[in-house]
Structures are given as C-alpha cells and as structure tokens.
Amino acid sequence: MIRIERPQPPPAILVGRGRAKSRTLKRAYTRSPHEYKSGSKCFAFDSGIYGHPAVKGALIAAQYGKCCFCEAKITHTSYGDVEHFRPKAGYCQTSRGTLERPGYYWLAYEWENLLLCCQLCNQRHKRNYFPLANSRSRATCHLDNIDNERPIFINPADEDPEKYRSFRREIPFAINGNRRGGKTITTLGLDRPILNEMRWDEYSRLKAVYRITEIADRYPDDPELQSVADDARSILAAEVRSDAQYAGMARAALASGFGL
Ligand SMILES: [Zn+2]
Image 1 (cartoon, protein in one colour):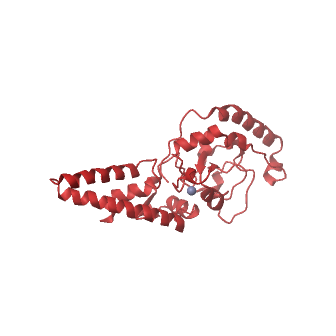
Image 2 (spheres, rainbow, N blue to C red):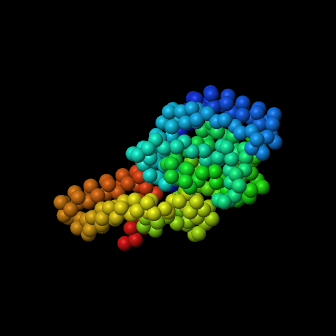
Image 3 (cartoon, rainbow, N blue to C red):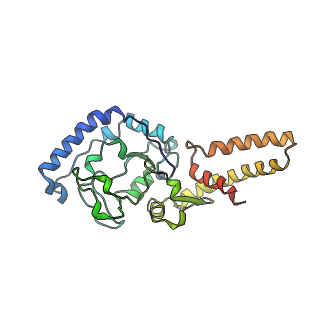
C-alpha cells in the first residue's frame, strides 16, 4: 500500500448520474429510516455508475493498474473491483460482528470513496469490515458527518501509508506497533503467504541488483563495471516508482540498504 493521488475532477458520470442517484437514495432513506436500518428495505445500487468504464479507467490510471491495498498488478490477471472504502450496503465494527445497515449508501457514487482493489483484498479480506477508533462517532445516515469518524483502516488516497507501515525484507509490519498499521496489515491480509512469496521474489532480485551498485562504488575507475552499475541503478529507480508492483516494499528495502 502506497499513497494514491486520486485525479480531479471526478469522472462525469459520478457528477451527473451518480449525484442524481444519491439524491434518490437520500430521499428514500428519509421516508423510511427504520426500514433501512432493520434491513426490511435495502438500497439497490447501480454498478453501472460506480463501476462504469470511465470510473474504472480513471482508477486504473491513478493506481497504475495496482490494487490499492496489496499493490499487486490487478490488470495482469483480472478486471479488479471498484471498492467502496466506506462500505455502501452495511458495515461491521468488528471482524466477527453483525452486519449493521444500511451502510454508507450516500457515498456509493462519491469519487472520494472509490478505489481499485483486487478481488482477494476486497472479497475475502476487507468485505464489509470497517472499524472506527470510536464506534459512537459513526455516521449512520447522510445527515451525519463522516469527518467525525476516525477509521482504523488507512485510506491510501487520503493519507500516506508509509507513515504507518514498513517492511522487514518482504514482510510488512506496523511502525512502532501502531494500531492502525497493524490492523490494516492483518485484516486486509497484507502479510498473506502468497503476497509474501511474491514480494520475496522481487526483494531477492532487487537485492542482487543493489549489490552490483555497491560493488561498483568501490571501483569508480572501472568503466565496464560502472556501465553495468548504471543499468542497475536504473532498475532500482524504476522499482521504487509508484507504477511499480510492490513499490512500498522496494522503497523500504532501498532505504535500509537491503539490510546489508
Ligand atoms: Zn489486493
């Protein structure tokens, strides 16, 4: 997970059809709040709006085709999900808690609530889980203010995840054991074995490349070695850019000199 710059203005479909649809949902809730809270009435969301190719395309471009949480390149293997950071249909305060309704229905088409996510992070790990530091501050309808909430999960489009998490080699950890970093890593499965394995492969490759630059630094008068080292430095520079898969790990590894 690294910082994401969500482009502005929002895609036109969210401003037009999205806001019109949001007004309809708000009016429906105002007419029957108890039915929506009890679950006897549920909102019908239009994935043709929040999942429109223009929305998805803008997210793919902003996130370089990577999952907002695990940084895997989604577009290599699937279409990816448009994820609602605040769940639109219902939420759980605890991982085994009951589903509370109606969810953040008024944010279903809000650009600031949308991210591109891989199916594993979205459907297996995050799902409807959305804990707050203080559940009593939760906005439960469109009349409440989400600015009063302090979400536990780090939203990479709102804040810099690198303040909360780092990596020891391929394994993510919460800096100074901070709660938000720890909860984000464990709940979203950012330390799941397949991700650790993928990052380890990348880490090993980059470490070998880094070693070339280290050796070359000791022999500044060797033009052949310096030429190879220039290529190695170019590779390292590319792997810490935001468009690189697992750039967060690569940045941490480079900053620590690969623990050498
Ligand atoms: Zn993911």
